Length: 175
Image 1: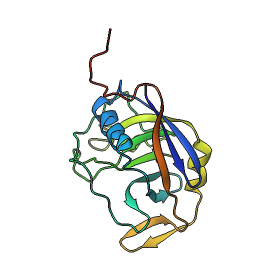
Image 2: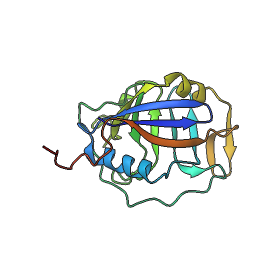
Image 3: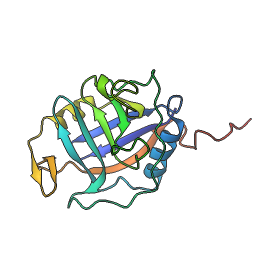
Image 4: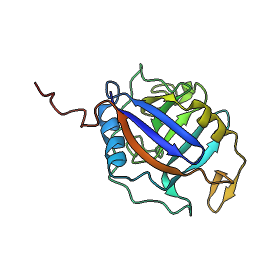
């Protein structure tokens, strides 16, 4: 299974992607990684005791242009537990594009069927949860139209595949 490393200004976070539970969501995330989309984006929403969110805005809070939204992939077995990564979206279940969040705690209310459609879990943090917790502990403020923005920007300097197969997960295996 593919692994992606996010190199941030606060340290590195390694994520084991889970195409077995969300293949289209993993393909979407890997397409953004391969295109270098996440370089220069920030963690723009940090809520201690809940989650950190990034992958859509630059340091200036300008939103980056994204691909078309993808359909929501959820299942009863894919739970929003501490250390999982899931796709952020609007109230429309099929609106996820590039933004993701990392759960700081078990957030059962975000699971499918608990209070609505749920949020697509597509991986687990395998290294760097201390970095995630450090980001969660940073002071935040309101900036423009956003709340909970870290006062000191946390920039994703690079996102790259570091292990596993970075090919599309729905491609047939070679013999």
